[in-house]
Image (cartoon, rainbow, N blue to C red; front, side, top):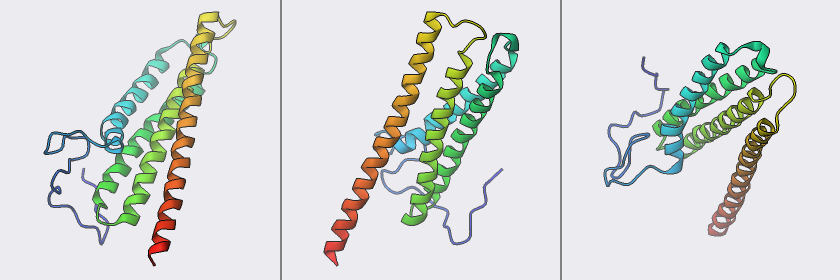
Amino acid sequence: MTTAIPPGVEEPDSLRPGEAPLGGERSDGSTQPPFEMAAGIAAPLLAGISFTLVVLTLQMRTRELRFKDAALFLFILGGLSFITTVQAAMWEHRYRRSSTERAKWERLARDAYHVGILGLLAAMAILLIPRGPVPATRLATIALVGVGFAAELWWIGLAATRQRRANRRMAQLSGRRH
C-alpha cells in the first residue's frame, strides 16, 4: 500500500548529495543524524517491542498482575506512538523543500516518539507491581523504571528549553538583518 502525496508536494526523484534514505547510510559512509536514527531505526524496533509486550502481557495470569489492563493500554499507546513517529518522519522527508511543513511533521514525529517512550516506561513500571506485598528487589526495580521515566521527562523539558532559546536567538538575529 502506498501513501498518497498531497497536492503541491513533489516526490523527490533522488536524494541530494550526501543525503541518506530514512534509516540508511549516507553515500559518504557516515551515519544518520539523531532524528533520522530515532524515526527510521529506533521507533520501528520499539513499536515491535511494544506490541510484543502486549501479546506477552495478555498471556500472563491476571491474578498475578495488579494493573494488567492499564499496562496493556500504555503498551499499545507506546506502539501506536512509535508508528506515528515513523509515518510523520516519512512525511517530513517528503517536505524537505518546504521548511514550514517540514518543521510541522518533524515536531509531530518528535512528540510521538516522546509519548511512545513514556508510554513504554510507564507500562513497564505498572506491570511490575504485583498483587499483594511488594518484595524489596521488585520495589527497587519499579523505582529504577521510575527514574528512567523521570529522566525522560527531564530530557524532553531540556530539549524544549534549548529549542525555545535557539528560536529566540534566531528571531533576534533575523530581526537585526532587516
